[in-house]
Image (tube, rainbow, N blue to C red; front, side, top):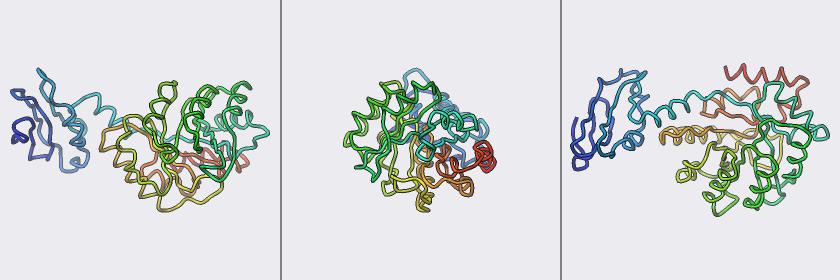
Length: 301
């Protein structure tokens, strides 16, 4: 183990792990993990983040092959690896004349939450519904979790309106505002979970500097605007890259996919790194919602 960076950091050449200490601090290094577990080592950024605190020592210990330095960040990272799959029925594909009934049925069938698409016929080539419909849904007694996906240009106003109408989570598009970070912070201040969506042609690296501000990254797997489209294959390596980016940063953000998710491809999408799945046409077109949700779950098992 040698000093690097003028004595402020150490590198364990047995494992390749780099971690930081303050001058004069002790660094305790446990025996290296087995070769089979080397790919489970925490990212060096997490380990570096743990150093630099006067009076504290940096401890690296094996836990199931993972060297844990900062316990809270490490547990958060591990939790991200264990996140259970979530199914989000999209009401864009339901019978809107029976909206409340359809939302209740979707969750009773095994869906985890409702995906609520807001479209303005400008950012995307379709006009759907907005905050007044969500407010009516709440007034009608629906209390389930609703994730509002804003596909519109007037992000700031719609964030306020949707939060007031009863959204539990709000997802905005990276491409829809010049002030992404400000909008994300505002969503959080309104008491909602925070999502950021990227269109198919937007590199996932766009989220790098706002990763601390999001709970979920939505990777569009179609060009947004209409239901019933087929998944674009180029989205799969993009999901893989997004998962790697989030994990390497030690973050616990979920990865949601929206567009063309079906029983026949949900396993492939999950294997790419997604854990949250918006299901529209393939869910609401089924004669039995419970059976269809069970089919999704079986593929994810």
